[in-house]
Length: 286
Image (cartoon, rainbow, N blue to C red; front, side, top):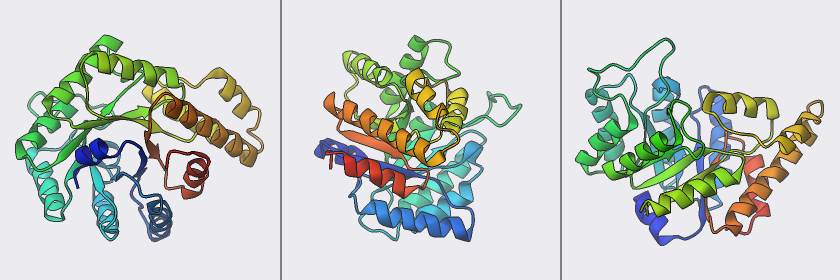
């Protein structure tokens, strides 16, 4: 089923993002994760593509694994940097032939010391969205950035590009992670005032490790509230307590979003089901 239709029919629920396993041990853990989280009847599940498409083969294999769960609606990620129309067409044909009707269309990270190529088939997510739209086979997802993309010259520039992606054919959006809900709520208010009616799901990353969270935040310009950062810093030498405190923060974050009418949540699982289930079991959204 197309995710656009699912999100229109269902006013609440959760979706899960996985990353592809790269060896037998991580594949076993991945399968266990899918088995556990599928019991929560997700709206859909997505599979990442790897920085610069580096995990393409692993992604395809992981998508094949997900196809073994008929109850799941699957959305592979596609990044277009360093790809051409032939490569993208091969992948979308493969997915379409497998019965997949959804694609998350992303630019992807630029390879180190690389620049955009004006002669390339795809340089930006909007190029991929337009190409997929012409094929007319998929419900297309796009990424949005409540705190603006780190490469954007201004918040206004970033928001204008977001609207252009939606106008080009994106059916729904998933936000980059954020830890301060005010950024997402302000973004949503701006989107609705601009006439954007497509579903926009908040991307939730459980804040269980402050050092890793800072690494993520520095690469994508995301603010970590000072009070929770200080609390987690004080627990660095007790990882279990830090994880527990981080989970409690994420539960509170989700509850606040729900109280503001946001009832479709997207979780970056990091293939760690025990953290996600703890959060979900504390919420009343399901």
